[in-house]
Image (cartoon, rainbow, N blue to C red; front, side, top):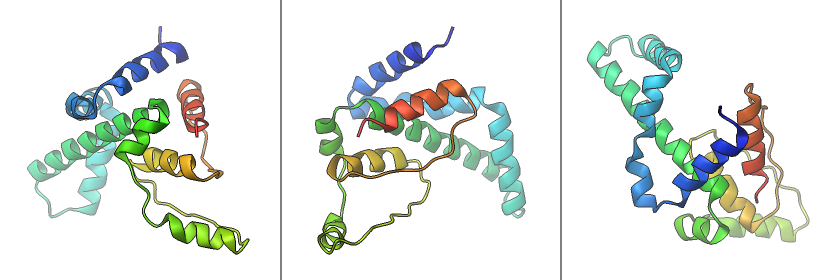
Length: 155
């Protein structure tokens, strides 16, 4: 049975591996195999957005999309389970001085970001440098929601 503890243990083990071992894991291809409904949605979206694209090109894009999703899953595991020193070694925030300048003026800051796959890793790096509050929509799956909340509260 899948429990929060078993999921956390599996991700902790994977996140402990060296980064160059983690990326080729192929989680995206695994996700493509098991997330058939999502793959159909991606494929249909590509049909609607790119009607001129050949079926073969669309299939390649679906695979590339899921490969990116797999990388995003690995990076999420890194963000939630890596120690701060390891996050700091592999990530960098550029432009932090602009935020500190505004803070020095005692003005509020509202950061608006795009929901890219690297969001979790970027938020963790930022949270290691400055306190902040993030907003999100709870996940429909209570198990995933618990894990997501736990991981995000680390920094």
